[in-house]
Length: 289
Image (cartoon, rainbow, N blue to C red):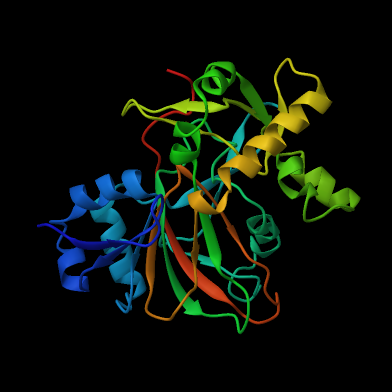
């Protein structure tokens, strides 16, 4: 089938006109995946999917992720915690709904990509709202394919081959500038990862790998590294690369985690805002080709 679409900005974000039956049939799966890479973010309004339908859509697009790599012990063993037994992760600060991960959601207020502590980051995620915040709570997405492609050729040459260290501590320092001893101890149990600054995708395209977890460019003076990473993040989050989603009940939003960054705008943490997320397992390594 051919989906009816409308681009929401020139460089990122497309609205799909389709009903639940059409999407859940699986007949549009290949087209949706292609659109995700091309446009970064896809939105369907007024579709009102229930959890089971959201999972069914995800399974038509890829392999659903039921757990998340959480931390690495001193002997190198990795423990895996279940985000949920059914594949639905509740994105909320309400600890009655999300007892294990609520405090970690503070990191969502910073520009980031998911999975920078893994060799193979998630492919994509699907979000639906269940409780909206009275104010704030918009989710923003920045297209890191487009941001890379618009760089001067000399800059692309300079960046190609650079590697960046990612840590959980860096991920939270912006939103928790004065962490407790326990918070620091917890953050430092997560595996430190080194990834290329430019992702060479199997499709042949390239994207910038930028995230709040970025700590330092390998082999570069810290001051110079900070300046470079800050400059690239400012570049990649220019208005022309960003789509801001204003949530409405009944929305369905999908984003390509491998070619975007995202963040949520501030809202009252006590308001009960809750979105349900299903994540698709990644299919290609971040390691340079």
